[in-house]
Structure formats: structure tokens, C-alpha cells
Length: 133
Image (tube, rainbow, N blue to C red; front, side, top):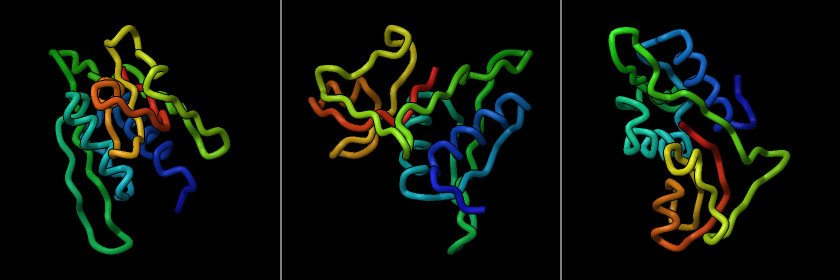
């Protein structure tokens, strides 16, 4: 089933797999989901990701990350900010700090998808896609 909002779909699949303590989850492979997975891996929220399948059946398999014996999920919360019905933009001066810098805001900028920290460093603003902590 095709969804209009691939980002929300991706975040929901990761959230559900996390709560069920799954090892990995599959999300539809798009350039946007690739970029978000890359940022999540850089920030240490997921173990790894890889693309499987061909053509229309391309999927991104995201390996989730847990800590300790009780397998506590590394990702506590994934929150979609900007959505198709209500886009949320921020200039470089007003970029949000998630939980005082503990969390990460993933932002779509003219220089690509990056974290709020990276966007601040490069002096760019953009669309705030989601918060992760």
C-alpha cells in the first residue's frame, strides 16, 4: 500500500518495531528514507540499514539498536513535526534544541538532510522533519 507521507510511515514502522523489540524493520526505500536512516545511524540511534529488492519492491531494512540485558530501546521517542497538511520551517536562528541538546531534530535543508546541530554549524535553516530522542 502506498502512503502519501513516507516519512511518517517510516517513523511509525521504526516506533512499532522498537516497542515489539524487533531486531529489524523494513521501510519503503526512497531518497528521503535513505537520508533519514543515514542521519539516524550517524547519531547512533540505529545499528545499520541496507537496501534490498529491486524496482518497485525496494525496501530499506533498518537494524534497530538496544542497550543492556533488558534490551532497552535506544530510541525513546520519534515525533513527526512537519507533515503534508502543515509544513513547519525554521530559519537558522530559530532551529529547535530537542531536550536541551540530548535529542536530535532532523531537518531538510538546501544542503541535504541533516541534524539541527549540523544545520546550525553550516548556517542553514529548513523544514523540520522530526524529533528523535
